[in-house]
Amino acid sequence: MTTSISGPITGPVSGPVTGPVLEVKDLSVTFRTEDGPLSAVDRVNLQVADGEVLAIVGESGCGKSVTAMSLASLLPRTATVDGSVRLDGVELIGADKRTLRSIRGREVAYIFQEPMTSLNPVFTVGYQICEVLQVHVGLSRRAARSRAVELLKLVGIPSAERRIDDYPHQLSGGMRQRVMIAMAVACDPKVLIADEPTTALDVTIQAGILDVLRALRERLGTSIVLITHDLGVVADLADRVAVMYAGRVVETAEVHELFARPQHPYTAGLLAASPSAGRHAGTHRLNEIPGLVPVLSEQPDACTFADRCPRALDTCTTKQPTLDAGSHQVACWNPVRERVEV
Ligand SMILES: Nc1ncnc2c1ncn2[C@@H]1O[C@H](COP(=O)(O)OP(=O)(O)OP(=O)(O)O)[C@@H](O)[C@H]1O
Ligand code: SF4
Ligand SMILES: [Mg+2]
Image 1 (cartoon, rainbow, N blue to C red):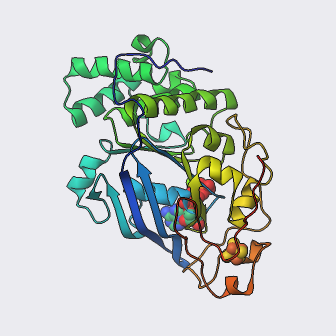
Image 2: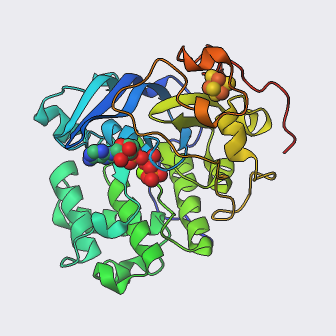
């Protein structure tokens, strides 16, 4: 499915990438559970520039969603969060409710995997988008409705003037996901966090949603943090990639560099079964590596990948590697250095 991005909404067209709009420093998240503390995220550092798409990849349970939820202050009360998340210079960790309310939706918006998480089945989609525009942007009823139609066009909903009065159940899964994206960008957020936005959809519909995200970045200059298991999506959309393992970022690089020269044995393993890295959404999921992501009560003084790693050295079991410096960063005592042909 192709998307026509039309309508009078104008905004910054993609231009040179400037300083970070989102800056995460030493972010750690621990949950209180019946079995004791669970370290879900450990000292994560990330930066997202204006208009940049950062993909976060990694196996199930490695901390992608918990990281993403902390960026939008959506974690439950059982979570203890340390470190710093600055959005356009404003600190979110420990911020008061008023600051968080003013930031959520307006500055940072979150797209969930399942649209019905955010859509209310008893109201029309138009009512729901207009409510956001009236409450958060202060538009009149009439202005909100006309802006809602523009937004529905922006996300590629055909006959937007008519579909605005549909209830969520009258729309297909792909159209509901588009409505959710329209709601998420209604207040023109600086950062859009998309957690597996296409996983529940079939392949042709996924491609349409990716077109929408690409267009938002180009037309509105929105920065995007994209969580996905799909390497085709990463290759298509991302500028940079952060690879997570057991709550930590173990490698980060510009997207083509990462596919051509994965340095962490974990990244190399994930990419191994995807020689073309994919150009089609839904077709290239991460390779499966024997073994499981460990669930940790605290981070050990060792590499957490050591028992699955074909390159492990003695040092790996006694000292935790940290990310090195530079544009391609890796946390590993024995990184892969040869080039991988893709
Ligand atoms: N509310 C919670 N309470 C306790 N533990 C949690 C909670 N949410 C997540 N976790 C744990 O934190 C760890 C990281 O979970 P997270 O949801 O971030 O993984 P993920 O990388 O998004 O995985 P997936 O690819 O399956 O979505 C997991 O061990 C998970 O069980
Ligand atoms: S630090 Fe050692 S065990 Fe960990 S990924 Fe690197 S080589 Fe493997
Ligand atoms: Mg997740």
